[in-house]
Length: 449
Image (tube, rainbow, N blue to C red; front, side):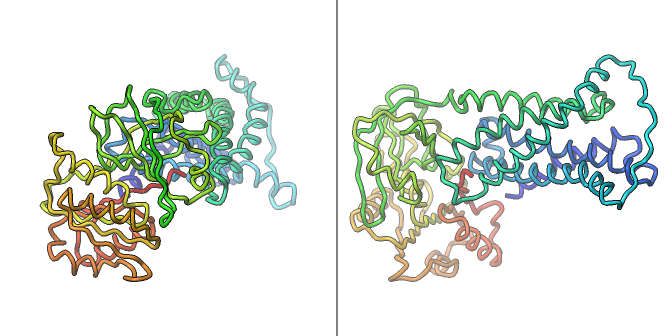
């Protein structure tokens, strides 16, 4: 998380510093209106810079995934850039319109303007002629972006509606690119600020085009077919086995993929609950009924149905040099650990065994004896020590209970997948006991919006 914060705040700081370099008198002569013009420029640069970063990350690019710790972390950063764009855009709008309101209310006096200077540069003159339409279109695009970003942040807003409306942000972004190109102070383009902003706008425009053409992740998509379905009523989860005979590059336990079974619903991310064997190219997803879409999967999916699968993504792959690992799966968060144990059970596939000593803690409020029986069998096959805690019977899992069960916890690494608040509570608890959480507490942020 610290790395994500450094990228977010580093982007804001770098853009602000470049603006200071490009602006010879950053805070004017002391009067309000010259300061207002400069603050409009600064806030506008920050807003379009953050929105450009959010657009680029929406493409699910491969190159920063490992450095940022996985696509789940990239999407968290995408969300933060979206919020930063919303905040800075509102500030930009207030700087642009607030003084006009103050003049209308008699709180400020508009300075006298002389004739506009003649612009000799034909390119600058061309941009100057676009000022009026850029301001009008930009304001409407701002209102649209505010509504769309707000809807994306409302978790109760149905995913299928989010999937359809969120793509409209690409349209708003393209209008705001026109707004920015026409209204950014022309002298900025000849400075490092202009070069960086220009690059962000170019990459962001490309990202918007890919989004509108629905080509995000197209190079990592394969066609699969459902070969079996199994429902576990006690935990309200469905196990879907998909054959991916062509094009799937293979995956590592702990990674996830996007699956599309209904074009109108769009792609949904699911952790892969199986190991990989190229001789038998199949993927298993275990999906819990948590929302509008997942609660209808049992009715909509059928054996033989074609499914589009995109991936794999993620860096929650159990890679470290610790002699002991502690796995914690909360509810459906048990899925990546199931995949790792199934991979370890493939004795005929080299490099699949679990090298470390492992304690797996599975805490759940729901109970399905068949599912728990399969989990126990997987643990035995992988030589993993399993601890199952049912909330109503055993109470909540705490850091203290883990430390009591695993005396070697100081030398172990911790791998957590489950509710985010639960993971953060455990992270704080272990940090308070001197555990190096930044290096050895791995948490998947499985939230794509």
